[in-house]
Image (tube, rainbow, N blue to C red; front, side, top):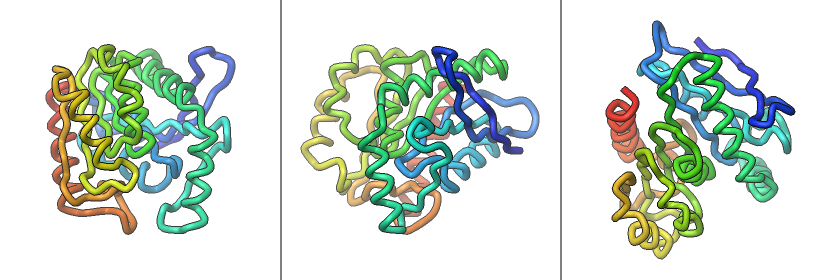
Length: 232
């Protein structure tokens, strides 16, 4: 079952919408799904639906709401891809992390689910790292996160488990950035890195040309095992 829910900002001065997929019966835990630069589009909603099928309550907040509420873009359409890049350039990532934190708080306080994790993709993968460092999310996963070397100064604040999936042939995360991620995080006891040689950015997308089926299935299996271990 899915619905749209309204979430208050941390400051309580505004609110934003989120897609919420509920499992049948009692949720084993909750997972915040952090969007790509394409908004809460059909692919992100499908991610939520699949998590619900596995027994989790899944919530995908509309993080672009301050710029343009309700963004749904298709990465396979060039004009929409360019629009997404423009939105990313104007997006305040610190506010985005605060909105994820507000979503976590909403789940705990209003929905009564104490264990809350997060999973993000692309821009959302970067935000997932920031969420792990800045919030009390119980477990966090990032797929092909961009710009992590710029955030390594925050690694000591990561208190709960974090899993990062790295695409080996990622056009947005060059080899030197991947090396910096390993050098900076391999010794962090709460962080696990998985490499996917030859895979490109977006390989685990639910639909469209970017999906690489075998790698996507492997990454998702690892993600679900990670959440089962740390969220229940």
